[in-house]
Image 1 (cartoon, rainbow, N blue to C red):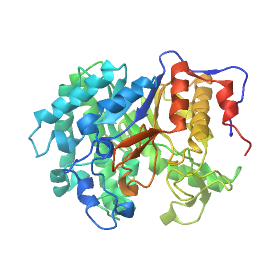
Image 2 (cartoon, rainbow, N blue to C red):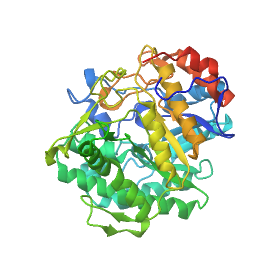
Image 3 (cartoon, helix red, strand yellow):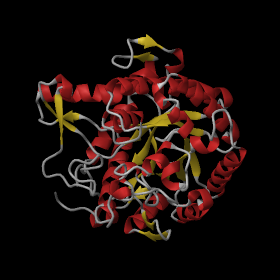
Image 4 (cartoon, rainbow, N blue to C red):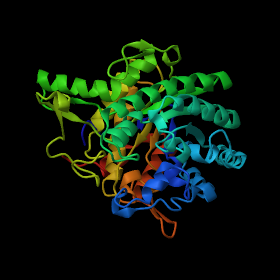
Amino acid sequence: MNNQRVTQTPLQFPAHFLWGTASSAHQVEGLNRNNQWWAAEAKPGAIWHEGKSGAACNWWADAEADFDRMAGMGLNAHRLSVEWSRIEPEPGRFDGAAMERYRAILAALTARGIRPMVCLHHFSNPLWLEARGGWQRAEVIERFQSFVRYTVTGLRDLCSDWLTINEPQVYVNHAFLEGIFPPHKRDTLAGLRVYRHMLLAHGVAYQTIHSLQPEAQVGNASALRAYRGERDGSRRDAFAAAVHRYLGEDIWLRAIRSGFILPPMGHGDWHPALRDSFDFIGINYYTQTLVRFKPNPLKLFGERKHKEGAELSDSGRDGPYSWYAPEGLYDLCVAMAALGKPIYVTENGLPDADDDQRPRWLLGHLAAVQRAIADGADVRGYYHWTFVDNFEWAEGWGLRFGLIALDPATQVRTPRPSAALYAEIARANAISPAQLAAHTHAE
């Protein structure tokens, strides 16, 4: 197992470490008919195998049953999102009943000793917002602020950990560059506008949350890939990796630190609301990206590659969750520690329907986190993606990330072996030598 230490002593985590899972509203709640994803699901070819979210995991009706299962596993944290289209079904009209349901959900988590972290935007937009141009138009910033103000006011007594926006890089890439997500565009200029608007909306949301809840901890969840050159020692590959990292990650991180939006999203213009607009770093990590230099600016001077001979998940060689590289998570935690803020691994997991890889991948990535902590990184929690199989966006039900398997037709749940393993680790707050030995094999 790469960089995993098989020791005679447990790999201990800090006291009060958060052991959690992560989800998002549209993927688990079910029957969410008022956002752009529900509309996209009706279009032929938009979702793999014509999948439909349908009842999803039935959380809008009965999330509490899965919360009982989380508590039974000894988990003490869960990251979830709220659905903008439920809370504000029409522009300017907020739904008190939806807010009461979210209050009940957060209260149910807290009652079971599970600390909630709430994300305010996770890929889904109300249909009315999409009809007005969605994130392509600057008015979305004020619209999002209004939604954030109402939501945080209604939930602040039940939650103090907030994520403003999940994976803005992925949203822009999939919705406006590759056309995988609705509105299924391939328009670079539109993508740049959207990224800029998301940055500005994050800054405004950060300030709004703190004005309502000064003690809140606020960040965002970024998809980080631990970019590096494919060939060790190649300066050209290192340069290409740096270009990809700059556009995919650094512009956002530099903006929320300095307040300056750099090219191509801006012209070095300064926005005070963005400066130091994060209280912690949220890392969503699935795999590493290697980059080989190519003298083509349209390809950002590099071709993304995979490690030859690497173990692949169900996502396949070219999928976004493709190959086993826990060392990348270690590198990211150590690098982000230089920013001087707490770190949470807000997503990590893999699609593995038969669960023959997940135990080893789980241990490998957790061992990488523990090693980063031992080397000085202030990592305070880990949120596994995900607790129960959910509707996986454009992949529909084709990729299974859950510790617990779900039959969406019957809602029958079947714990996978990795669920028991994760429960053992969470209860012990440590990885045991026996666990490492049982799931380690030579590569």
